[in-house]
Length: 367
Ligand code: UD1
Ligand code: UDP
Image (cartoon, rainbow, N blue to C red; front, side, top):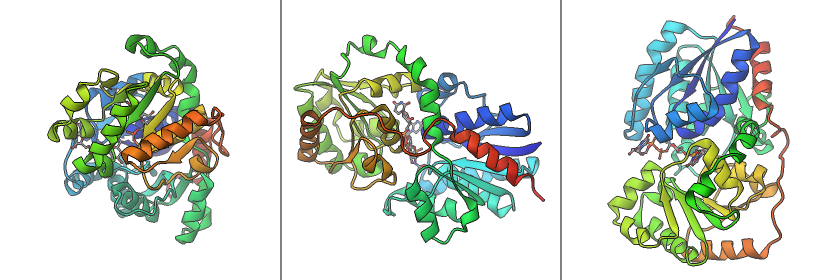
């Protein structure tokens, strides 16, 4: 039996770990141990996804909670190390680019335990993003690098990663989307919120560059207030953003516009339904850029760069300057354009987790 520790910690990790846990358990040749670091811990940022996606309860919860980058990363490392020593797994599997990803990869690599990174090779080339640092470092110490799009293979080649470690396997986040699309179609969230199909824009924001500075967040909210003059705006609020809206005194300002629906973070199925039926999605999320490509829904990414360029070249994504005019112009362009068609970048076919399992099985146990 191949013993693998699978790590998850923050919201976007849950969609990625779900199909991996399923195919590992089904194989009968692997013994997956699920570790939740506790980086995200609110019911609506964590447990809800275990229910929606049928992820087994974590075998261990490290309960690290929030903190500065150094504190959070160090806490994960301190609590993860004894677990690795106890279990001595053949592999530690980390996904994505959050602090839990680099923390657990670093612990494993230093103990001589092999590390597999799922969603390797993505680069925004913007080191002011904490995620970019996590990506570069995790890839540098991983033994197997599972890549979602060809740009990732190129980036790793340029960084000198030996070719035999790199596998273009597709996108586990899209495995989850395709597996849950029908269930999401049955969500009643539109009726619950009194929304019409294509009659609203959906917004998610949580990047520090957009939400940690009132001079950045203010103009985005001004744009949303204007959009709400013509269309409903549905805004499930990430806890980081909720905290800042209150701290900057913006809550009341947008609370006065009843067509801006400030709602709690949504579960996966309700959020997938909200994305599928939106007029457009405005976001700074990584995963949402990929999901809207498959759904064929216009995505305006309020950032100057993306680590997922395939969503621009083959998908429905567009980079938009996060200014009031930038956002309003981009939305006007959506209205002027023909409807977007769903796309399927190479290997985004719902079988990425199976490919990862096969590579792991053939790499085998520790010699
Ligand atoms: C983290 C990831 C980011 C990812 C995002 C997905 C890092 C460096 N950042 O950002 O890459 O895109 O998750 O959502 O790993 N909080 C709560 N409840 C929770 C979790 C967080 O209230 O369950 C609040 C706390 O005040 C916390 C803040 O949100 O300080 C930020 O949480 P943190 O995990 O540090 O970063 P995110 O912004 O969530
Ligand atoms: N998501 C969700 N509910 C929400 C907002 C997002 O289920 O209210 C999902 C979204 O569909 C995607 C994932 O969360 O699967 C993306 O996570 P997030 O934006 O927090 O992180 P990022 O991808 O930017 O790292």
